[in-house]
Amino acid sequence: MKNYREFICRLVILLAGLTIAHLGVTLFLLSDLGADPFNVLIQGLRLVIENAGLILTHGTVHMAVSFLIILILLIVDRQYVKAGTLICMFCGGPIIDFFSWLLKSLNIGGAGLPVKIPVLVLGCVILAFGMTIVIRSEAGTGPNDLVAVVISEKSGIRFGVTRVTTDALFVLIGFLLGGKVGIGTVICAFLVGFVADFFMPLSESIVRRILNNLGKDKP
Image 1 (cartoon, rainbow, N blue to C red):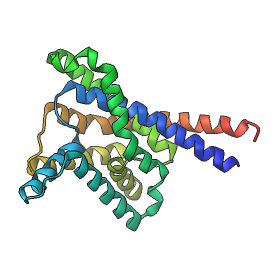
Image 2 (image 1 turned 90 degrees about the vertical axis):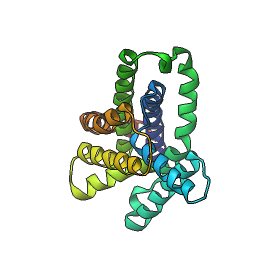
Image 3 (image 1 turned 180 degrees about the vertical axis):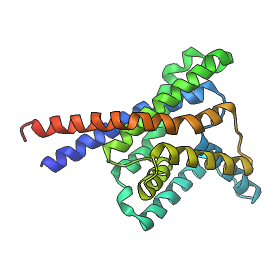
Image 4 (image 1 turned 120 degrees about the horizontal axis):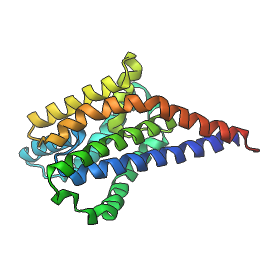
């Protein structure tokens, strides 16, 4: 019973982190200064597939790549693929849609760079914080985030370094394949990983405190 309660609690923590992270993603998108690194890769792959004669939507390619990452991890080390991984895959889009609807009246996209860049940076910071909550929930992580998580844990290299490296590779490969890169893409690639490194101990402390309080409750 206790393990079941802890599992549910971890999923709730993951959903809270996912919501925070996708508020950040929404602010990033509304700033309209370029796609995030992973989606630059998806753009590039979609163009390659389209040039080969197969027309697929951006969302379809995104889903296919996500499933491919999960498949590879199931072969390499299946412990990383958890219930929360699927939650991250399927809940991210609706959360972004909700925040986009909620914030559309701000008309951030129609503002100038003095407004857009701070909003973008704020979005990256919020994204990084939410992402660390998701990771520290240990209930699962989104497929694109799992790449950096797995590399970090297997190599012993700090998460911030692996995140920046993988984001930079996503951008480079996507750009070479024809994806569009903006100033926001570059800022995101080099900011999110290091900010996540800063928040990781705090998020771990928050999750541990919540779980400890849960353990003090009567079953």
